[in-house]
Length: 121
Image (cartoon, rainbow, N blue to C red; front, top):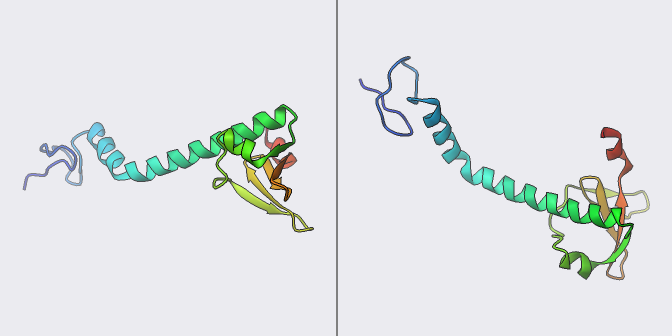
């Protein structure tokens, strides 16, 4: 029985358990299978990087308090963050990697840098 490549349909020569005629066909086939997952992950990672860059730029400019609308105007997406930390007094900080913020209640955001991440540099 003649075996066909799963990607291009060419005849396969060689081992009996081979599924692809070349490395290129194997890569093409697997890239097609994972395209949707990879695009979703790439988009989310891009949003996280953008959020981190915005927070880092503001923090490095020593702007530790900013209005929520100004942060939104800079392109910050409040739906995407890496983790949430709640302090013992109940204050919640939304972090995007090592930079975080808490809402102060008057539509302002207070920025903070997590010193634990500085140990890994």
